[in-house]
Length: 515
Image (spheres, one colour):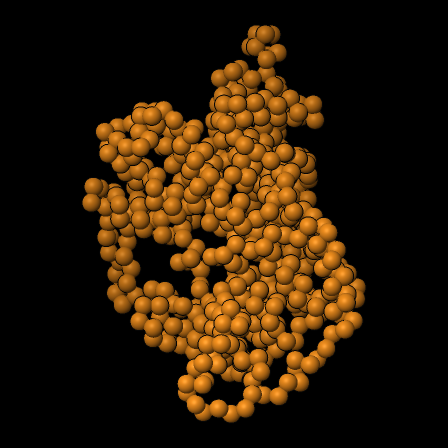
């Protein structure tokens, strides 16, 4: 390599320092903003050790996370696998916040620091800031201050009420996190610091003036008039906004046994669950966006002569490992790799925009041959989630490349049937089935609060809307019901109702469960 070429390189060895990081960051930023047209939050890069990365894993990747025994248990598990060489660590961790925080491993080579900076600080960052789900359901500017408040508040509760009492509430709240999100209506924004201060004052006042009057109310009188009972039920449901999909929210607002500090802990867990809700719906798009961005930027830097061939080989090796998709008959097959599918679809969109085939022009007449791949990707990243993105942009060419096919597996049959393959008749069916598999509304159990008589027996009635005959696993179901009972204080029952026929498939109650 000539002296001129060497002097143009951003880095020449695997070692790095902060000056090298800053120089490389500036080069990456220029391509990301000016060539790709990305729009990102301000970046905050932090260098952490492998142990700190393990600790971040353990606390669900959130900075300023409160303490809980489950985080320590996961830390020991991950550390054991890492020390024995059975599991590697992520090269980075990125937080959806403003500023966007990216943790880089200090053990990374400089080539890897460049790769993960492009991947996280610009790819994920752009997606967090612009995707409609994150804009609708999260407040990146408030999450750090809120987590700081949450950590301090729970620590204060442990000092005042004891660690076992706080962990008992957290155990039950964590068990209900998947049922602690709003799916169909927008939650209120996180409190500002001023509102948090008023909330603290309100909680202190409630703790000083807390009354047990609710618990001493007499039961409602007997009434055998069916019309009157039906009218009372309708009015009760209307007053309590039932049915309610967010179980943690209902318990926080309605439980008669929880003290103010316990309600606030439920709210903290609920806010964290809501924060992660968009990430569960955009795994393919989010990782695909970040992978496409780092691949494009790194190749651009190489073409400019700013990255050496040796560094580029290291980057490509890591990239190839990330997007590797084992076959269905491979012992390593974990399902469809979201990195592989997302990256392949975004590369395919670029190909369709630049060099379409006749088939592409039939399937994607709006974008085929326009050359506007940047604009198409920016629009897709902003306005889709995994389900709609696959349904709109998965091409027959990519279906053939991944060799996708569709199986039907009826519970009453002792065999599986190949219903569709990658041919003209099967493309739309396969694309639709794959898109539905990323709809968390169909994969997560739909459990709602249906009724409770606060002035009567206070029996809390939940309903599981059963889809495609898929029932809850009994042991997990019963354990979760016990957690609901702990937070509610009275009997809790769950009925499984088939969504198509309306038939009640099963009923269970905490009164029937042994401790």
